[in-house]
Length: 258
Image 1 (cartoon, rainbow, N blue to C red):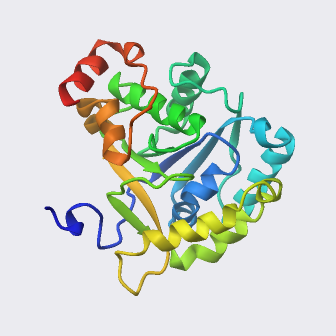
Image 2: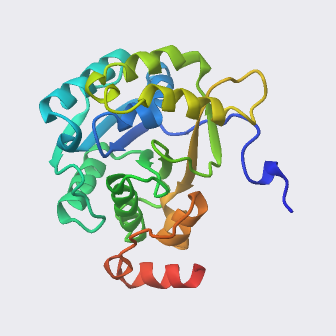
């Protein structure tokens, strides 16, 4: 049996890339999923763009949720997010409007580092965004050397990079508290604290909080295919992978690695 060190990092890592694009399915995912990284990136002077893809209206007032996301950005120090108008809980990885929104953001931002929800997530919109990105990687819309970092919000993924966030933790909490309409529906702050503490488990006593990511290049995802990429991060049973919509290359790659 392989030791733990072969399955999870035992030292903190760093997400590389001077130009950063974050895709958030809903207003708050950008903070709950990768707020620690964003706080670090601001301090390092990286160029950041955040795109919130849906209106968030399935769990609150859309205008309120957009303003909460803006306030969270002010507290973190990031640029104000850009907002799409796609329907909350209406995303599908082959939805033309979703693919167009991501393509447009890629052309505008030209990121070195693209952050997306993990395909191991529970929420269907999160999975849809992940698989839409995988399809764009397979079709070479995303440049092969672009780094794609999958983040976690509501389900733990199998990370290959752990980012220490102790130094920015209070800023992350402050930003998370901006989402007042959401904190009354679910214990998101408790989940955030729990996940950050669990992620620090293998990093030694000098790190008490961390974020988990699964990091590959777009070229690596293209070679392995969407299904294997998803399988590396967590359970894939029940994953709605529309292979017929990824094109012949995606289907062949997935079949090879099943």
